[in-house]
Image 1 (cartoon, rainbow, N blue to C red):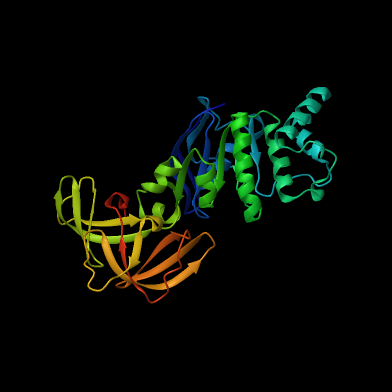
Image 2: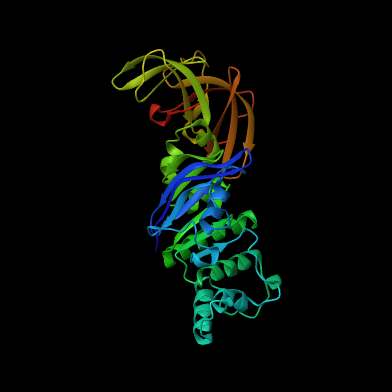
Length: 357
């Protein structure tokens, strides 16, 4: 297991800043997710660690050694590409053995390592098959076995599950996590899939425009986003804007632009300050509005505009003044509330998070 430290990594392509001074520490044995939209810098960072991209400035250290000038083949890093890059003319065993053979390891050792690697990814008995005879999930396991068989210090995965359908992707998330824990190797993976990042990662870094906007454990990043971008990219969020009217007992009372009032914790708040609050759809409770229903703190009144049934849950879009809010409800009992219904939304102040605009 190895520690990876990236310090002030900068990479520009003419006027385009791919990495704008990124710093990151990945502890030994962690499964670390780099999450962000296309062009945000996550893949550039992965390729810089691998050695396929040279940084303009900054450093990459593995176990305290600066590998910036070390050639790709000498970095002892395993990499699995999005398209798996399997050799079509080779068998499963030959694909897995390739990295060992170019290192001129003795044949008995090669055979032993290949056998162990295929057993780890549960492909024993498929040694003689060609890639075209395998399912997408099996091809992915072959590529993973090939990346691990050389016993690298660090494993890099570029969109490892992107080529799989949804059902197989969910299955392989569990399998990939099992294998990583069994081997204990420090693993860094790139993804644009929020669910994948939350499911797999010990820690997540969210990228935007060549910079890391937030980094931390998945639950922390999801529950306490620091910016509007982070809140909206990692899951769904409703945003409420308003002005702080007063502060009492460590909590701020906010006059919402939509009408009504919210009460929540706002660190370092001052009366008159403008704030943007993030509220996750699953944190909102709602019910049919009764005649003359009074609006208290942390409540709003709206009208259901759209209802989307998704099997075990239903998504509601509710118009509140000129803004449409989204909320989720698990389909446990009862029927859905129909479009056109007047409803009252409510939530706990603990679920409101102040985010940067």
